[in-house]
Image 1: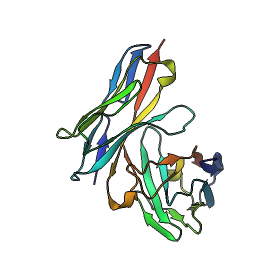
Image 2 (image 1 turned 90 degrees about the horizontal axis):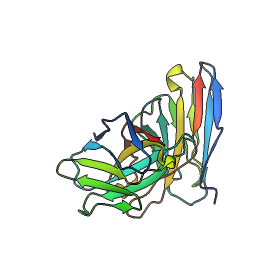
Image 3 (image 1 turned 90 degrees about the vertical axis):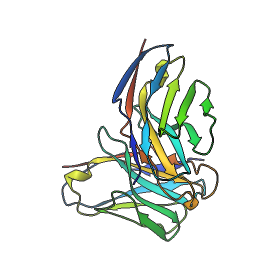
Length: 117
Length: 114
């Protein structure tokens, strides 16, 4: 079974600075997808960024970027120029590719990100 | 498009009671999912469906039942509610094809069993 580990229960960063959230995963599959979801106090799950395992290039979405290290099974999220609206729980998630995409996501326990003004 | 909708938003049940959590999507997605989120934890998959009439168990299916009679609706049934089922429940849906099969989530239902 796949597992996703987020070793930082909470992180704090000053507004406008950069923060990196860590995620490691364990799988025997060679083709899979990785995601970072944001969950603000409203509880809504919001997709932040995604990465295909067979792509070596790290995904980037505006101020959000990832450092994907397939051999190390590591998938960290970097948030640049942190803003107050970035404060939320962040979840790392995994999904095996193929099988028609029917499989659900496997989530880590989350990292609570605090933005200090 | 309303996306994925869930009702109710909140519910308090007594031990042993039953209820159905409703989920509907208007995006014509084939795949639908139910997750639960316990305090301080990530989401865990309860059941999923790949189309009308087809459902399968996820990681934590005990105490729940599902049905999928239409593409749009995927209700989750709790029989004989227990305090261990106190959680926030999320419904999600995705296309059957596409690179990522990105899942779109509903706003969640907070359930308390006392």
